[in-house]
Length: 478
Image (cartoon, rainbow, N blue to C red; front, side, top):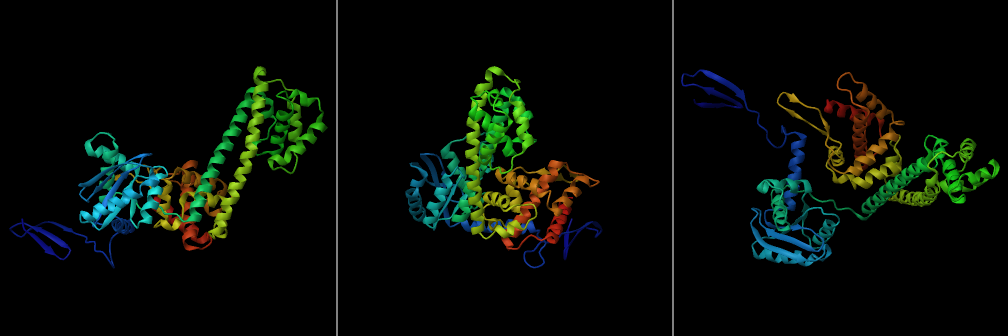
């Protein structure tokens, strides 16, 4: 059956000249009028950048980082090993390995070396600095990609350091790698301050939960006398502190003081917890609870003494948390982003700083969706042929960034009309309405897109632009 070409049409004809089929081939050409999608163009740009970092004229030094015993291979782009290394040294002592690899690579006919490793703990950052000092490019391999590569190697999950070093070099040669983030001093300091804040929030929450558990066991009447959010009530915390610090685990002793003396003691302890106004109703309820015998009597004294220690820790944690948050706000001001981030209704500069501490400099992302993917909040499509499955967020990326965006949405939703409108649309639309959690996840992704646009363009929040962006996101998701 002859094949005849007619422009972009292809005619399949039989010998008798009868047309049996006719179809059109759509040609994609690079340049003006290209039919490549935006995703295609971004992917091509990423591959070009990776090829600049892993040029064919460079040998590849794959390093499997460990504590003191490092395994490395110098390989070409066909995974042929030029030289193996086993070095007993810390990560910051690998400068000699890089120098030796460059000499051997040039002797083998290569121009230089590209350094490759997994992002193992903090050690990859040390190697990145050593490579940058020598003018050597460096890329990293995602641990998940390494795991899949081990399975593809021999259909097992076998793992050895010498074998992993070869796989690291092989994945880099195939451009299954990424360019690691290189933070400047201010952004790096913001990241560390954000990590410190997260640790203190976790510690403060754990202390509050332990106090609640101990009171439920030894003195449940104190919890019954508390407001809805007891650990946000300075009056309740001060009253509890008076009891546990001055009554040796026996609340009934404070009942003998009388309400006036008890109130005066609570008023003196109020500044410890950042309070200025005393709530008389809370003090009266706590005073009435002093004579309540409910609870495990044999454990009450020990439990309340432990509560005293936990309250001291809670006070210290709150003070350190305030210091860390003040430092983050100072860094945000140094970056010139305080006013810009504060322009988003419902999002405080501190909430924006917590998000930026996890993202790093947003300009390193090629587009807003890349930042959303980094947080694991991008929808994961499930479609093949005529089948379309349920889309869920990927859940990959940085969990701490996802948590920071999630926390920011809770406050912003009450004060941001654009988010309120989108939340209502997502939860009340006639087809495929989202649950509360799903809608909040979508709003967290929207917030990240806003922060990306504001930080990269240097413009304040604009409700009209944000509304149009949200509408496009909804249409894309549909």
